[in-house]
View (cartoon, one colour):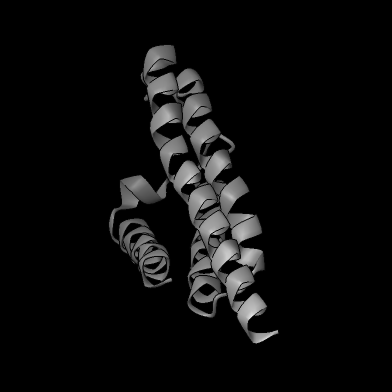
Length: 130
């Protein structure tokens, strides 16, 4: 739990510092792989902060729902990287997009494995106490 909580907390800290101290970075926010710029970027950045902060707290409190949310969110991020590479002037094209997709699906696979292990452990605990 602590590693997932630490990851979410570090992500929030990184995003906050980046968005608040680097104006050129704060001017761009990516959603669904598409860049939002200017006012829209600044207006939607706190949504990213809130998502990671909420996930960090949920992992810290071992909430069941966070697993059902984190796995699709991780898939969303992987596919967003593919779309971004295909659509952005700053993107690297289809080869780099597919590489990003593959790399960002690794954490998704780890989340699935950890979720299954967690469920087995909880099932074993329930069997011994019930």
